Length: 245
Picture (cartoon, rainbow, N blue to C red):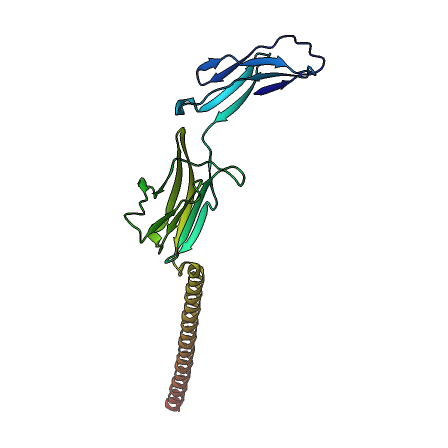
């Protein structure tokens, strides 16, 4: 049902409306003005018999410009309690999906769980791998997938699909499995950086001290050479004075 509110100054005695769904157009079941003459109401009733009747339905008021409102007819949507879960190697995780809310429940014909790690969809079969997977589907509007002894290979996207007679609805859960060393990696990186820095400082200090020692040796050698040169000059001078006499 669509209701178009009009102003009191609008004196419209007739209103044209239609309903659209895809390329199909339907005449309204009723079109009338309410008792207070404040809005026009139109209604269209559909009896849903198959999946092809699902989709968008739009009521159109033939005003200038046209005024529209769209309804989406779909199967009940799946709600995921935790959309992203972080676990550690060896843990057990549980994914939960449900249809409906606390007051209204919709029971699908059946549930399907599958994973997708980028290479394609893989349907999960707990019968073939009972030591790895387990399903809990009580009540009927809820499904739970339990994964035992998780490993890094279990990191993936998991989908729960509720299958109804008139269509499907699904929800997504992302699982990330970490090793116990993962939280320590930042500290290990910092520790490695500190060790490298200390090693560089130590090497620099050793090199600086070695360079200072070499410089001291060179200075002492220069002083010795200077003293030798001065001594030689003194001998030469005394010899020369002796010969002159």
